Image (cartoon, rainbow, N blue to C red; front, top):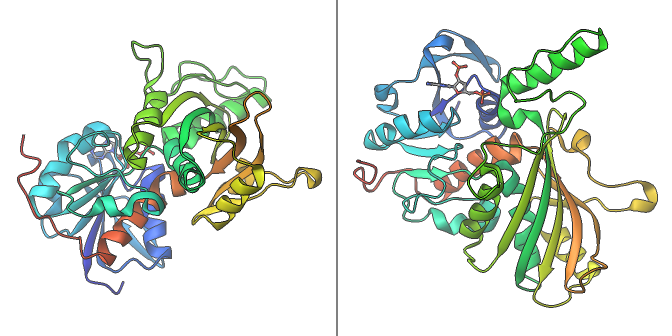
Length: 348
Ligand code: A2P
């Protein structure tokens, strides 16, 4: 390691935490030391970090003494409890949970869209929901053509979004079913193998799930446009890695497929994969492990002359979580923002 920052990953043993470590290494993040933190259950566990190994320590209130930057992916409750302690130690937190996303004190950032929101941060920066990240990466270049009025999105989300335990459960259920055995159901309310669940996160009073409302509310915050209306149906599907989304985007004026394709081809972090005659379109099996978000099936909405349909696929663990968090950290380094100006901002 050759850098000047002491970096911690909280939730290092989880699906996203492991990927954070991998990406910090891959992208040669300027760290002098990397600390791996998780629950007491994992203390002493060894995790690979490049050619070396990190020994996991228990996440505690004093874990952040001397740490410059912490990437959190250990669940909302853990972030709520420990992120303010980190800030009070002078550590800048990039948090992947939903705990701080809609808090006015916390920027919610997708670097390709709103890196400017990092300026003046108060110690905690929120990493958006995985489904929101891949959607706004596509909406941002499109709104450069014409203002967006409304988005109707249906998602097809991989089990890794729930964490490593859900990845293990899908694998176990598939094995058992091929052996004619009854699958065990523990993580979701129903079997996920060979099934689809129109249920991600908890149901709310308005009949939507929390995941669906995250897509609505986070999009407005990231795009800094309260006029964009988003309605979502989010569905868990038996895919291990990479979320897919069917988007219907309604503009203020008619936008041609050629205009949209041109804007998307120029967009940072987006790859257009759209040649139906050759059966070319984005699929989770190809997007898994990649950094870019892929868009295809771009076509007119035959029922509305100001709308387009498209299909968007991205790796939920990489760009949808770990990569976006590391990219936020890279922006903080680039802009000289790895410091907490106001340690009292998160005193409750
Ligand atoms: P552990 O492995 O020790 O339980 P995933 O999202 O894949 O389920 O991973 C969740 C991550 O958050 C894991 O690293 C897990 O550690 C960590 N974690 C969960 N609860 C806590 C907690 N109370 N304190 C610290 N880390 C936690």
